[in-house]
Length: 130
Image 1 (cartoon, helix red, strand yellow):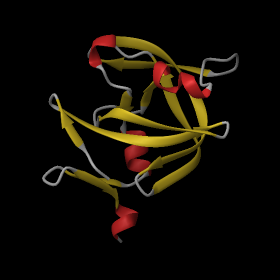
Image 2: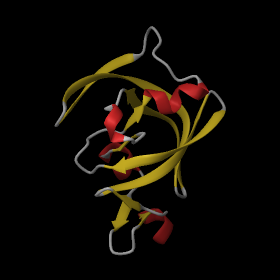
Image 3: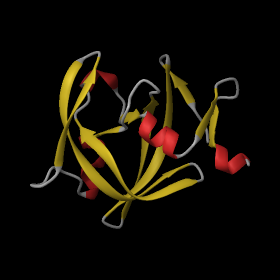
């Protein structure tokens, strides 16, 4: 899977489904310092992802301070050849100046057993190589 190097950040994309509707999200920053993947609420609004009563509220902490997010279960998430079903991701606001659609955090990177090849600007699931 291809990695883009944009403005000093590593970016990739993933495809997810929510209530049967597919969406590919580009401009996801690969963030090995983030414990959880965070998707921009704006990036997923078109497929009906929004806060609903009963959604778990979580707090994300980072350099910019803290931000409240909500957690949603997605039908499936595809990252390269890795696919996982019924997986929870955090959804919230990102700083408007960032021009990104989210952070790909350690939760999903480790679940997918991702290997980052920075020399080749590619990533792959270890399961793909074995």
